[in-house]
Length: 106
Length: 118
Image 1: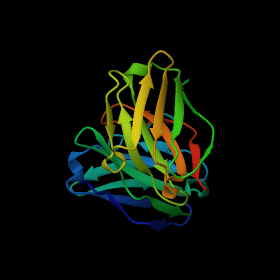
Image 2: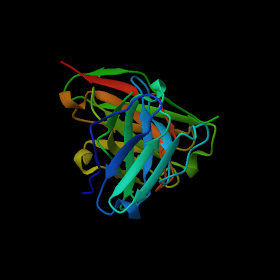
Image 3: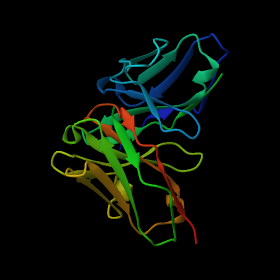
Image 4: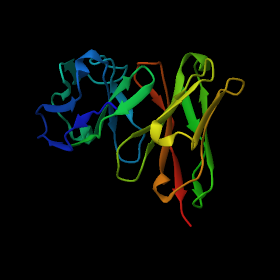
């Protein structure tokens, strides 16, 4: 089955740029969605279809997807961005696949 | 506003069954599928399955095949997930979310903690 691989953790200083990657075989041919999850909360969709920001998500969040790697970028990182981040794709039009998650420490 | 409201926490013994509900409101129920995801304590997100609210057709992750049943009642705009033969490692928070096929999960329920304990 299809596997999405994320680094377990990323650490960044406030005000800098965080880049969280999601690797999968030819992931560039799929649409990638990204979620932010804070402790005790449900996940929040922050990027859909590789690079679209849902309403209410700050412009500091952006996404890209090419080849075997999708990337979530957060510029001007704030303390409130500290959370777990998950990538997700649909595989074979009927199965949902999540990456293992990346813990962002600010 | 779109809301997905789940049923309350459950404590079950090993071998028992649990049924979690997800009441949708604020949108046309039959347009979006309902996805079920679980998260064990301290672990990542794990997809269980999804159901088309349009025709009631479910798809399950292979590891849950035979133990889980997803249903959707269009008259009450409520989706249900039943998990049978519970094991200790089924202890997790179970989430429902809505999505179009191929799309992101844009609205989530608040989660339902299911604890399996003797």
